[in-house]
Amino acid sequence: MILTLPKWFDLHTHFRQGPAMASYIKAHLHMGCAGALAMPNTQPPVSRISGAAQADGWSIEGYSAELRAAGAAAFEQLIVPLYLTRQTTAAMIREGAAAGLLRACKYYPPHGTTNAEHGLPMDDLIGGEVLHAMEELGIVLCIHGEQHALTGPDYLDAQQNAETHFYRERMPRLLDAHPRLRIVCEHITTRTAAEFVAAAPEHVGATITPQHLLFTLGHLIQGLKYHLYCLPVVKFEDDRMALRQAAMEEGQRRFFAGTDSAPHTTKATACGCAAGCFTGGCAPQLYAMAFEDAGVDLGTGYGRARFERFLCLNGPAFYSFPASPQRFQMEKAPSQTPLLETPAGPVTPLPTGLDLELTWRMVG
Picture (cartoon, rainbow, N blue to C red):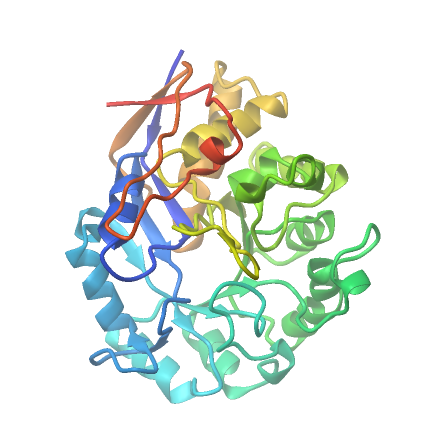
């Protein structure tokens, strides 16, 4: 069986900085990716609109130029969000929108994930001039939806976790204060988040990663498979079922692909484990495996249409650009994911780290 699909857009991924950027971009191009939203939690962060890089931050203009020089010029679309920090102002939002450089801003909970120490609490943003300017100008707010500074039982428990806290307490307040703000709830992991987005207005959408559609906390803990460790962490079976239902529902328009692919040359460290699963080069195959594992028959027109909507169509529509006119193909056949060799060192793809054989392979 061969699937022929429009090239897809990864609307949440990490290309980092430095000499390995070209390797990460090449891996995305090789898996039929037509464009990307490149996360701004670089070192230093993408925290300004224009100008040369400085010790405390890149600009969108400068980081975008670095990405294009590393191979991202081949993408049909490249979006670099502005990292929201305490130095972000409404004037910067207006400057970026007027220049055509700013299409999205990224919220990180302070210290909530890799290079998130520059973030600020959501409570400090709600009702403020920055979000009002974004609302007025149609700039998308990309949210890492976890509450910060929680104790262990509040951070992850059978009944609650950092994400459910955020979607029950912060997100309703955010929508009440900014009812027209365009929002992408990124890499959602729980039934609470999926149901919140499904009930929200049409201008609220969400990305879902392949690992959160495929795996649960049990897969991570059984054998301590640290290549599956990402933030937000994979959750429970009921959560996986809710994510699958949201992504695979016939005709749904607001859930779409965003891999959160996050390369680390050193995954296990002396003080813990780096957060992030690297799925560059294999994400469409993993998404296809998740759909099939949930009972969607990709050999039928009905199943293929649901897969195409999630992977290829909904994301571009939400971000207001056209779906790709180009096509890529996947074949139902076993394949492996070798280590990605980069100038900074090898990166282990998630399937390799899990000793998982893919059931699909890229064609061409």
